[in-house]
Image (cartoon, rainbow, N blue to C red; front, side, top):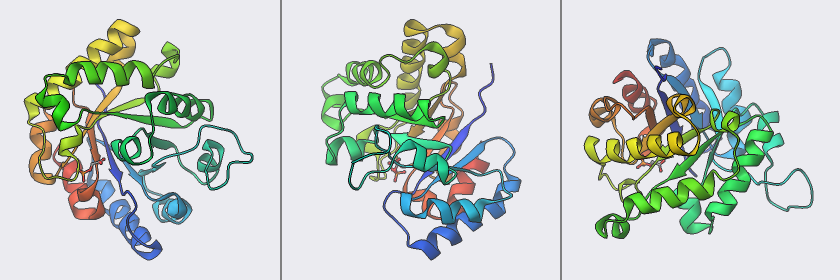
Length: 251
Ligand code: PGA
């Protein structure tokens, strides 16, 4: 099965409202030229609605960077899946390494959020990835398998078929140190094998596995040419429409 690549921009905690709208407009404007990939932008939650408006009429999808697993209620400061969906988000990034490291998100938390996102009709982009010391200790496979099993526990085959997985080696995020195409492919193939073993080949074939970590227009083609790399989760380079579109155009 041919998986259509997805190029997702993770804007993180960047931009003000005017910049967010201008960036979205720039992506929307250039998106007509992109034939071989789906495009997604994930602005800060507070700008979702403004960015959604700027994307109207384009094929660029809207996503959030996080959510809370519970339904609406007494959870001060949090945002529910229903709220994200209400302002037009279709995707939500979950378990990003910055949230795992800075906000203490565990696999169990990511799992709860993944199930809640699916229940609300959002497409979760579930992130996994090893630390540098884990890679150097030869533990990458083990770490990925643990995160995979914990973050995706209890999903039905049907639910699994709806998610996106992002492999983001922590040492490659925001460091300019990109994984080599071979390093990326090795982990992506491993994730595909885990999908097949835990579910079945048909579902495993459907799930898009994105690579993230210092993706730029200049390294995108090589990474995307790997058989199990189905797109990219882009941080820094997604803050310039030209670079983001350049990555998508490299496929
Ligand atoms: P980067 O971030 O492209 O800036 O390395 C990727 C990410 O954190 O999703």
